[in-house]
Length: 292
Length: 292
DNA sequence: TTGCTCCTCACGTCACGTGAGGTGGC
DNA sequence: TTGCTCCTCACGTCACGTGAGGTGGC
Image 1 (cartoon, protein in one colour):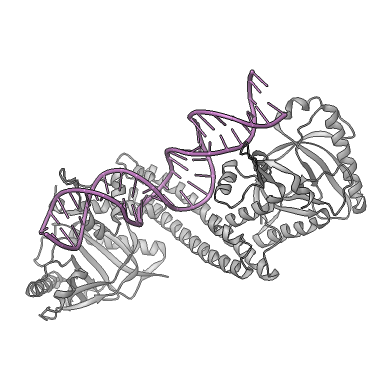
Image 2 (tube, rainbow over the protein chains, first blue to last red; image 1 turned 180 degrees about the horizontal axis):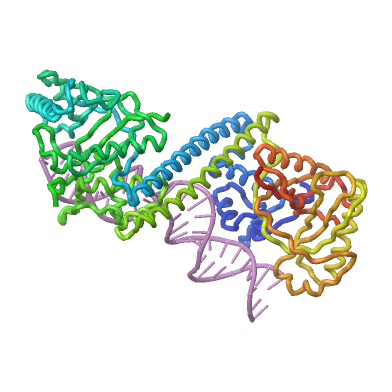
């Protein structure tokens, strides 16, 4: 009890002294973070002591460091040790670091998009996004294709085997087609490609009955934590534009291919027959990447 | 109307294809950002077309750049020109830049606090905050004080003149005392100090009646956009600790003094009489600063 | 017929800001 | 007595997530 305790301010005056809004002070009272030194029993007026200014300032300082109010309540608890405070500060630091990085990458993406739009004079044709892909079960066949010209024909044959196998096994709920290109670089000969369809987890029972036909086999496709994706809608023929857009985006934003196959997911359109190259399809280019 | 339009998916399937949660799709429907291609009249089931995937991806791409959903609605409007989109991107870029800087500074403050707590082994005695101070009216007197030893005496005399003047003018609602130190550096002789009290705007009328007594005069104190502050509670004698804390914080966080007087705001305790140096006071050190 | 999917409310999140409607203090 | 300050609800913010309670489809 020293003489400053006697000095009581009404909420408005305390608000001015502390540079904090009145609703904020009421809020802190409500959640028990800063209770008024005294509340008048008849008028319900809140009265604050100047001695509460240091606590309020400590609250504001922690808020400024990015802590939530309930975390601040813990930090101000009398029982908390300096060691625990250090721990919370380190956590907060890690989080702030992460946020800063995210914001920097976001900035890079905005710049990238702005550059594209200024070069092309209109909205870019493809919206490139970064996703994470989960692990998946697939049934597929992998084959080395000698030249580009034979690719369509081989793909058709590969999917024919896959659908044959599934029919034999009685699997009816297979997902969309997924093409994978295993070559590290884009080449025109000896193309190492894998045709597959995804399977829902519920197909587990049927999987054991899968006969092995023409090299078709069950696989688990690993998850891809960072994947650059773009959806192409239109003629199969034009899909290269989507691929170009994806690689431009990667160059702009500082990503490179991870050592994992490029995927082509067929949301619409089947390869098991030689489809018209001008027929409309909806497919998604998925390139597993890593930061450079 | 091309053949892909026929392919309609229920919300769950579309959600899986697009990697977006069902509540999110419902939300976008509700706010009109992405309406289902078809809604069953009897069951109210939403049906989406794969043709809507590009629009959804555009939405996600813009969300990824940090736009709010209503801004995205504008960006996707058919009437919007590439020029307007560029404008919004530039605005967004400026904002992202600001956010990144803020996060970087926050990080620096966390590190600073962590360092202090590790050096001292306990919570720091002072919570330093960065505030902006508004412009203010003050009544005060400025004087050159030869040596430190005479300071207390001079301050007392200066405030005596100020309170005399206010009494003469009939001003009763003067605010707290505000001491200002005009020397650019801390020195022990020829201290250029100004004693003042703040005035509320409502005192305007009384101000014209102010007699000029012993150099006491009305002034407007400029706003300080960036000010490092610390509240000291305790003996006047110990206030130097608060000052040290403020300057340490400045060094840690990359700030230096702006060319503006250091202020000492007396929330509690009056100088117009020589008060006991051990008497408890509540005062705030305010140092106008700028980034290095 | 039984799961599975879908539907529509309604409430919670986070830290307050902003009225509405009413009262105390100088 | 008149402004001024204070009070307590109650609602809005932003982009959904999470049940509750009920129904359609294979």
